[in-house]
Length: 291
Image (cartoon, rainbow, N blue to C red; front, side, top):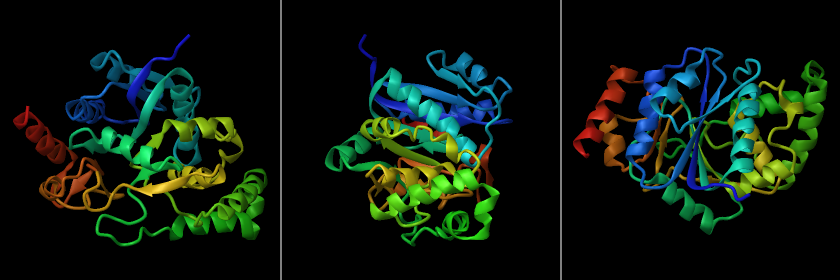
């Protein structure tokens, strides 16, 4: 039986107390800005029925529930891997876009830009805000680098011996393939290629359950594992490229993001005296003005 094909699969991980209103706004922001075929998957780790509430608004959305709370860190990696694996097994797609609940799509058809990028760079598996921040300064990878180094080279190895033993082997392979310890594409929003995710599944890394106890973020693990299987990370955030992301809050004002022709942004939590509702309303009004 042939798998359904989509231009893009959108995966949104949802945790406890996530706002249904804001999730719906993020989904609407993508729908407004695409002309492509798509499938939306909610990776629901809320255990509060949030995914089902979203499905009431968007009936075609697929909800994947975790059997038990996974939480953040490597638990989010496991949850996302289940969603990515589901996508690979059930669909064909040009690109997969992961969006956090505080990410927003503000420009037209970013998935087409991503598809062109992967077509030109087939050995690149993940693209987004990388390796620099919004202002062109190298992203600070000191924290994940220390976490990884502590796990593989210090007495802290004994805290999680099974996971850290696996990490030692994976790190060794990744470094041979050009990995810079701690590097990753920022996790708030990013694109992955179907070829990359298919290779991850074949390599037993979608997920690698041995890593579930590590105190590393999902983006740090994907950055490492991409190199393990011979893929690269790609910049999609420079001048003229779609991503405009920061960790906490927006990197610049909503007006500047629009003027800079950004298409995917993070985080809508705040910008100066604007809260999340203010920011989302600002972009919603702009979408409606352009309808």
